[in-house]
Length: 284
Image (tube, rainbow, N blue to C red; front, side):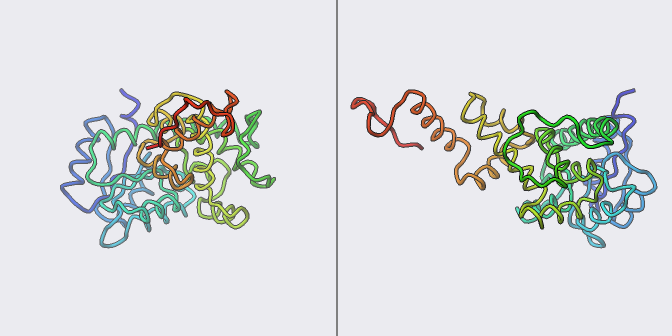
C-alpha cells in the first residue's frame, strides 16, 4: 500500500466531465476520492469525511470557491485543511484574493494531470513536515536561525510568526501554514499583521523569498528555475512576476546589473579608473 492510498481528496467541481476526469486520475494514483457538485455539498462532505486535501473550482452557481474556502477556514476542525483552487480565471486579482483567503495553491485551466499531481504531492509533503514541526514545537520556536535576514520588523508579539517564515519560506508555505503554526485563524492573523506592519503575512513571505533570490542571483550561478525552486516557488513564471513587482526588473536583468556591479567592486574598478580598452555593452 502506497502512502497516497491512505490519503483522501475531496473534489468540488460542478462540471461533471471535469469532475470525472479528476476522480479517475486521482484514483489511478491510489488516492481515495470524494466528489461534490456544489459548494454547499462540498462543505458538508468536508465535515463528514475530513479529507487530506480539497480541490475546488472557483466559479460555481450556488456558492463560489472563495466562500467555500472562507467557511472552511472559519471552522476550527477544517481550518488547516490544504486547499487547491482549479479555475479558468487566470487574473492576478483572483489569484491574490485566493492567497489572501488562505488558499494553498491556485491552478488555472487548462492544466495537466501531472501539474495537479505535483501540486498535491507538494502539499502532502509539506503537511507531513508541518505535523512533525507542530508536534515538536508546541512551545515558541526554538530553531531560530543564528543569522536571520534583516527583513522583518522587531515586533515581539509577532516574533513567532516571523521566525516561522524565516525557517520555512523555502518550503512554499502560505498564510494557512503560518496561521496553523502560531494558533490563529488565517484571516485574524493577516489582519493583525497588516494593521501593525503595513504588510500581510503573504507579503512578508514573498519579501523574504525575494531577498533570498537577490542573494542567489548575485552570488551563485544557479539558473532562474533552480532559484525559484529553492525559495519555495512551484512555478518559475510566478516567481519572475513577483520578483519584477518588487525589484522593477526581471530576475535576468537584475542579475546582469548586480553581478557586473559586484565584479567591478571586487576588482576595484570605478567610473573614474575604467581601462580605456574596456567596453561596456548595453544590458538587454
